[in-house]
Image (cartoon, rainbow, N blue to C red; front, side, top):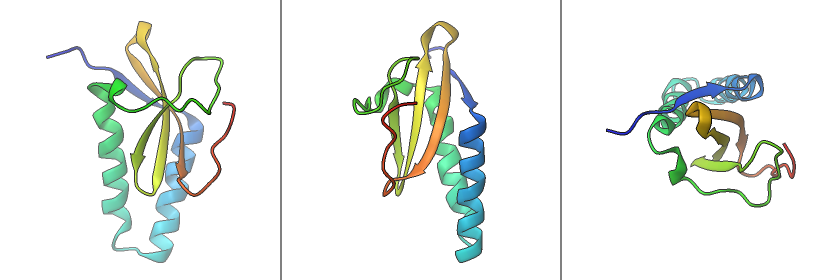
Length: 103
């Protein structure tokens, strides 16, 4: 089994997840915990093979490539820090929102 990566949430990504949970709770309280669990399970899966998701060539970052994990309708933006064997979550955004050009 390959060495796993550690996943870190930026303050921005953690805040966005909380806002997503709050929004879903407001509109569909019974579905909010399960949907948030689905997002977190997908994020946790980045511990193994984080390179499997595509690079978003439209987003520029000084720290390197930005990859996108889709948990419909949300996009999870992250970067891989190979030297530290870490995955840094940058943002969790609704897919209908315009993607940032720079991070």
